[in-house]
Image 1 (cartoon, rainbow, N blue to C red):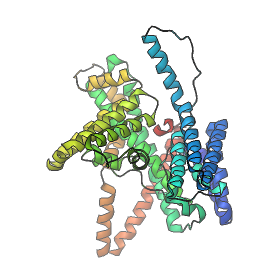
Image 2: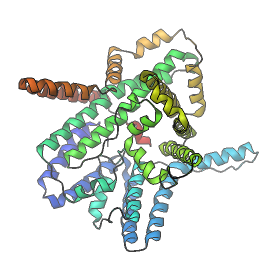
Image 3: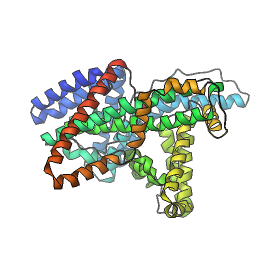
Image 4: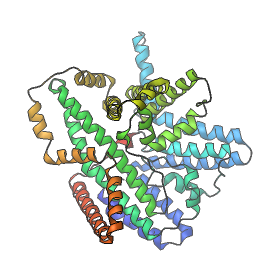
Length: 475
């Protein structure tokens, strides 16, 4: 079930909210757990059983750790989770590459395995479970003795499929008791609408432009078109994923949970290191705490630090998908992280800030080429087009077709609000309201009108576009 579907917005969510608030507090976790299982099973059907088995294994594995059988509990849960992730996400990739290698060596296997369907959200669920079990093993938290509470944490539908990655330690108190006031609930609604508008109004329009251009025959792709496609894709992936995170955070607030922020204006970064402090923050933090620090982090020699950083980003890329493209994307970022650590960061701190911004945006945009391309060959082809000028006679016709007023407006808004304009406006209104109290009233009325308008426009978009998948659903 999608957040951007009429079924979710006008049937599922209202029914769950009404039921949730009518029930006594002690039954609300059970309500959320059942609702979340239905939410997941709506699209995944029988695959929900796998997620339920994983939840039970991790629940009892953590209890086993706490009872003193620490290594056994940790080993069982880690092997089970990573084994499940490998089977569904990486087995086909591994098998295909082994067959290709044997073929290159002149050996024919003549064998094949069927295409394995990957359950939605399995990467996020695995990271949720592993962080919980490892934290219990480290003694940072106590194992939860309530299967309903733990199941609610794992299955909680706002963050189940595409994050943000929510650590158990950040919401374990809220799993036991949640005080939901009108302010928190209304803030949740506002945040959800903003996320919905990001997805439906900005991301989808940018997606149309990027997808149309990159679907053209190779002979019809020119330098300017590929650059435009990648700029559009850069906006698409940001507003698609941050939009989902906003909706997840907003839904969490409606039910009394406070999820941490997942994005903080990443495109204003002046270095790749800063970019990763602002982009997909929950993933960056997870890899830092559960991979970078355990393999030595910054407590080792400089060469080992550089190697550790590179390994983390290579794994980050591979986490996103079973493809050489994703691994190259991760290693590409890892290379510049290491280069900045070696000394480039000192130069970036001294040079004119717009130059540092330009450097960062160029690296990020080039990296998105591999992230977006279906194959390594296509990624290299797009890069060749971007840095070797070519012109096609059909350029004007393509631009006229895809860049309607709506698409142009969406991209302009997308570029504008990738800057911290909202915070600046909020601060200005606050300063003005101190001189004139009516300004705050007018601002609140105007904000409510804008939110209502965004919701209506987004609903109109949903009505004509019944299928609105999120990019990160496939990870």
